[in-house]
Length: 426
Image 1 (cartoon, rainbow, N blue to C red):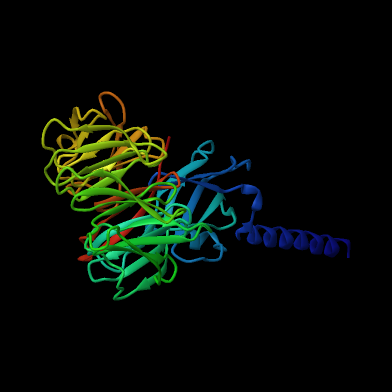
Image 2 (spheres, rainbow, N blue to C red; image 1 turned 180 degrees about the vertical axis):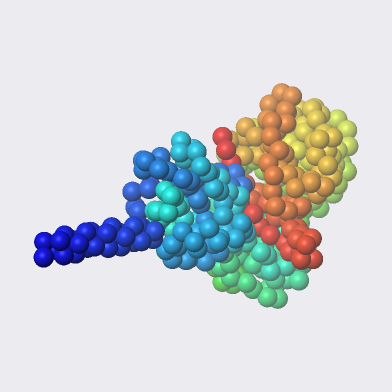
């Protein structure tokens, strides 16, 4: 009897041990893994705590286009496709990995494997930094930096509004009547509501940025004088050029001030952020620089000593560095030529300044890079940032670069125009 009892106890112990071993083959959701991510330029970096188990085997990071439950057995973990695995690492001390950001939202999970046992982290999600545009025929872009919106004007008279924080469409308007043959501009009313300004013959339409309804019409003085391109400063003053003068509309006083006679037919205009420096020019002309005081009087006036291409021009926010023309010519405030960016940027398209005027970002259509230059003597190229398209436009918002360009998938024979958000590393 004693022998039989002993045999039963031994069998029970063995059964329990086997059951525990089998159960340990399955995953446990482990919040203690502290699986985290940090977004970097064109990618995401993962970090976690070092595994403490005695017989550590490897770390595995998985990714899926949709939210998925944690894998429940080691066999399924081993059967994962390579497209679903970001990293497999057998070095215990290496507790980080990196993945490039997908054009789609992506879900990640960390598994810590110890023989036939493993732990699974909570799932974390990385939103896409891409948005596919509705159209590729873009005539103009305007950035609403207060509300984080992009206004895309298409040559079909359609307007698409995109949320730059969520990278999703807010609205799409077809056959709008607000379009101008000249550059439009963006500002804000006294309540902080977004407005668009569009020149129509001798008037400027003030358009609600939400519903595109005309709120007000500003008539030029004297009536009948055509208005060309418009720009705004940080206080939503509207600057515009006519055939023979440069003018400023003050939204508070509702008055138009004639700042200066236009020296010739110059329809391109740029102003610094504070509205104190005004530049005019055309595709090939002298460039004129006016410094304006608070009472709209001209403090100083300078003209470039020779003809310069002022098309495709960009002015620094505070300093008066100028970049213009098909060659991306960098000029000083005294119109001294310092560098042609086209010598380093293949098929040069455009340049912009960062918010502090310390960096110049340039793009060209021959390569999928954003070229980063110092905005100081020498204008040294300090970095080439890879992007996912052949760019045609670039702008800066909230410490991030945004590019618009053609993305081609040669294996699938598919091309599309995409907006890409790029985190800038200081």
